[in-house]
Amino acid sequence: MTSIEVQALTKEYGSRRAVDDLTFTVLPGRVTGFLGPNGAGKSTTLRLVLGLDRPTAGTATVGGRAYPTLSEPLRHVGALLDAQAAHGSRTGRDHLRVLAASNRIPDRRVAEVLEETGLASVARRRVRTYSLGMRQRLGIAAALLGDPEVVLLDEPSNGLDPEGIIWIRGLLRRLAEEGRTVLVSSHLMNETASFADHLVVLGRGRLLADTPVREFIHARVEPRVRVRTTDTTALRAALVRHGHDAVQHEDGHLVVRHARVDDIGRLASEAGVALLELAAEEATLEQAYLDLTAGETEFTAPLQGA
Image (cartoon, rainbow, N blue to C red; front, side, top):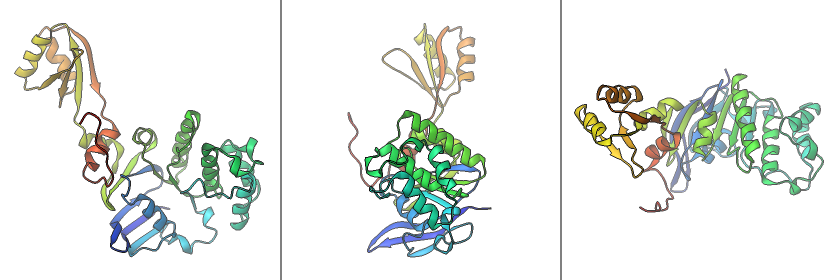
């Protein structure tokens, strides 16, 4: 089994501890979202996994081995950390051919990943003429070049248009379904919720959560029901009798906290109150994430209207 194992990982830069005794495992067969505020240590952790930095203490291994010990590493681990890393004077095709040659990857694989990432038609253009989205696709093509068992991507949706975002979602899901280990760092909560099965969340270099997405959301965001009626007074009285607290909004609808749709519907029926609207207010990953990381953000701005 090819997994990413991080054990008691610590990285210090002078007096600053960027990663603090971090332990987690990224398993194959699922997409793991890697989340945290700016300065949380995500990029440093990825660099430690890929051998680009040395840890102060602890270990980071892929399939039980440190990345620098892998021969022909692109065949084992594909990574995108910086979409601007490709040499601007090379064509997209030549950039991939150099990478392929250095890892004894067949040249035909270059054509395959160019096609897969939608770059075949611009493969002979110089990278400096590429848009941000095209550079992002080229970086993903490089990560896929060796058909690796492990894929690490930092902000893969950055610069992609709507079609590209839909494409990357499907790609990530397919990689996981093929049994690969997929770790994706992102600041886009709604986007992460669309593809991730599992979450690893950091704050100030420490592990805050290591859990399935659904469990993460449900543990931190209360269930709420939105309801609108022809007789708000009667409904509120019925809710109070059953121990519910409801908040009325300007347009007249009520929000009932810690409640389920079935319970509120049954209660209204028994009270003889006609309903115009009854729906669960879906908890979001963004709400749960902000709840967890509220005290862990290094750089913040005041909320509008606060």
